[in-house]
Length: 633
Ligand SMILES: [Zn+2]
Image (cartoon, rainbow, N blue to C red; front, side):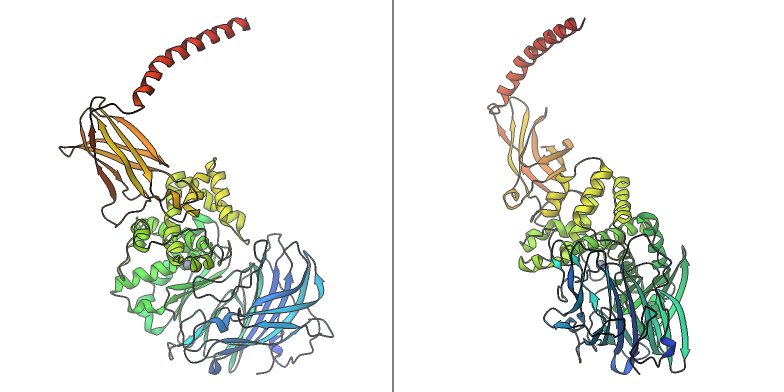
């Protein structure tokens, strides 16, 4: 195969153009725009199955959307960071050249420690200006291995999965400058600006190709087939997968061609149902958050140890589902994973975020969305939180017992690096604690406000990058009041509240129970929690003589009049209260009531003040009002 050249300006090329069928679109024929300017990429590759590799050509038209001049631009070349079995993956940069004659070479540096390459520009790139150049490269995906890109299995169940397989432009932001993080084994290190793409693939004709975007053109060239895919609307990256065995099912959902690509070995699990799950998820999220604008959505089987992986317009679902329990268990996992990865089309692709610094944001929103699907489709928000295999507790039980079991902090608003440095469990924070706190927010501000907030987040941040502060501000705007008291403790504290009965005495002569509750974790946290907890008081006969939802804000004292003598007080957490517990059950803390014959210290003085001062204040105010009234006349 010769060098592969496709340029997006109609200029001449000094390279081999023997593949005349590759001389496709001379421009980016985009029909979709929202008035914003984005970068444009044309990615052309020739796939060689015998070496699990591609020859590639990325033509870059980089738009500087930052208020800063640049003299060089970094790209991720992630493949060498991925796991492999026999041969590691790598991206070999062959050349970087300008697009216009005389096709000058540009200098580039490569750094293997963080898998980046920097292209040195020959002119200064100013804000809102574009620069164009072409990168020729060869990519080999890891052989064996079960990472995000791999070739794995044997025909007809062999898959070549190409993800993060080309130079991907890094993002510049006000927090980090250029984000040149290496491939990480914890979380997803993916952070990209949205851009227009054309994807051109030449592949042996006995392969079935699943790729990001609508199939615009397919040219049969004998031994090879040439494809042109176009997502039409901007995306953050592109991917493709090739297999000789893929079975395809498709349906049209609200104008979107939804397709499943699965292996013959998995037909008994995937057929009909996988497509239904994708259709239901796409329909629900369209209605709930806002419209998925792309013409295609592919759900593609893959080899990985994790459940699945999201890419724009194309998601991957692990073939391991085949081996998980009974048919109904397999369907549970298939549905759960498809719904989750579909949710990422809204929270990761359309609304982007820095997955290293705010990875919990798109994962948390996606997990919450998956549970919302459980609520709407299966009638239970916790439906997917009771997996049959392997068994694990629902979020609420895991979160309430996390600190007791693990002892280490779990501040949600943490980067992946902070999690590693402080011994925090990123997966627990992003996939378990964050969706539970989002659900608590829904219960706090009401379902319609919460859904309206998510809709607004989607509308405002579609094609952009969102921060936790955006979610915070938008939820405040729909709620109509500050939510600092909610967001700051729940997202920025290291530990949950750990309530404790500091005092619990019944003053017999006054028939008053004095109850003081404090939070033993308060000294460990930056912000104070406020939440409502169910307070139950029972007598010696076991009857509940008091049952109210009370607010606990820091150390809180209650003086409760009780005609019958209380025996026990209980803070019942039920399924709502988020507080530290030693074990999932019981879901309450309890104390025996002490008995005191004297008077409540300070309490009687207050009573006296009320009895003496109130009439006095009343008399004074009446006099003043009378005076005011008179003066008006
Ligand atoms: Zn996810």
